[in-house]
Length: 184
Image: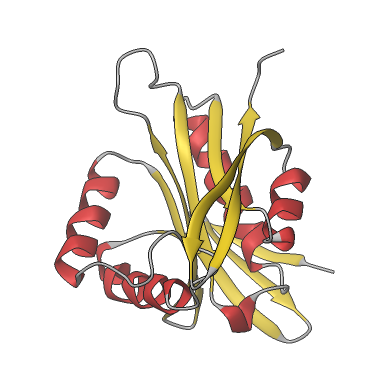
């Protein structure tokens, strides 16, 4: 069972069967590790739309912009290693700013250990505090673990893009999910 050990200045430490990780708001010094985590997961070619990470310069700018704008973006750390991330970025168009898009990933060796759950909880809490009332995401239909995690946090399916991706000789459906906060 996941046990919260301590909460200090938005830093959450978790222990699960002698495995410890922290969930913290992203900082500039996390950009390189964030990029490495995205690259590792992208190269699996099954969880993310991209098949490799963008440049370190892009990640440095992305992280700096999210920090400047106080967007909900967290990383999970094992020591100083970034082992996962989660963010909710608000939509920039007028009339859509109450909504945001969720993105996340956890390194393969850390999946199933509570890391994704902790990241998602922290990120959703910050997004809601920032005024986001609709969080949406897209996930590949064969990613049952991610879909179960999203459902656990209240996301519901809104539709399916059939055969939306064709990669490595295989079609994937994309499931569109959303969480509405404080709305009936």
